[in-house]
Length: 204
Length: 205
Image 1: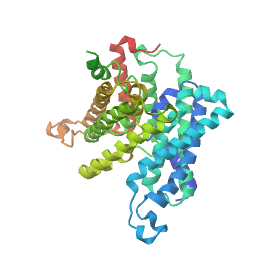
Image 2: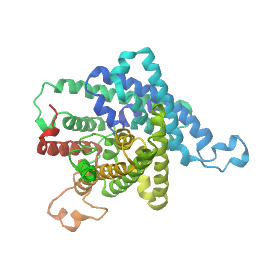
Image 3: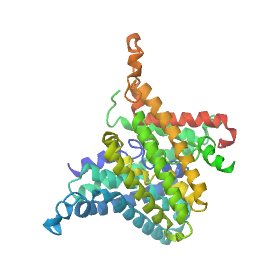
Image 4: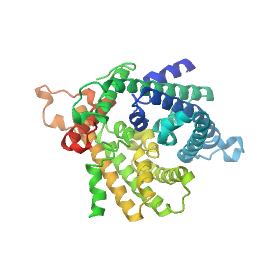
């Protein structure tokens, strides 16, 4: 597979939000204004872009079946893949802690507006599933894994900025009181998901 | 009475999905059929109850600065156990759930309850809170799974209900839209709408 193919596919066809509904918690909670949601989107893209390649190397040289063969041939049959969940989440938690410190130092205003959701990127499903999908789909080399991470991040960014723009306009419309806030956001995301499905074609 | 509230409130006024808006990702992805939805519910109940209990027992010894990593280690150990059990006993469902079992680690319900409840409450209350929230999550999951499988593929737990009722002979068609993921979002939106129109105090201004 070539890089452009993977990039476009992970943005539109396999969009994290509209095709798999991953990272919905922060997507629903941070998407009140375009400005904060753009900051959140960039932070998620950045974390994905660092953690997926690191986890790719971990998976290839330590965790997958037969991956330890480079140490000595006697280890060629060891399969540590059941440890991958713990390893991946440890890498992600450490990177997120670092990103938090960097953002706090260089952009205190962004840090304040993201609030609790910055540390919560660690438990953002989109980040974790970036690593898990990478493992499941078996990308050939680290370049493909990186391009996949970038594409997923950009797809998540587009999705959250789009819903934030719609929610800013929704403030001026008449919605039934019981549907205001979360309810209407769910339904609109569903409709946007239908629109995004046209990239892979409907099959009813 | 207070202990009873811990189990009762998550069903309605404090439901993890429709009110706290936590754990939405998995709720939408695994509900195309009833069976994966039930297996997923059971897994989440086990993980959230045990994680709540363990973290609550450890709460006085966890340093606040590294609490997220400690919680993640507890949760991911439990999830690895659940994952291995599922692979051993219900392999086909485990394949169908794919990455979503692993994603229980990052399921916001588990982390949210640990942060908001288990870190500050006694073990027994945390245990009950875990049961209540796990069940509250399951109710929504099973309702979605039931509706989507019945109207989407005309079966329930693989049993062809619509065919046995003879509805196809009088021109009934399955609604293919129901099995597609966006419909799960729209159905959840409708559940929220129904719930909030009954409970005025949940409405947002």
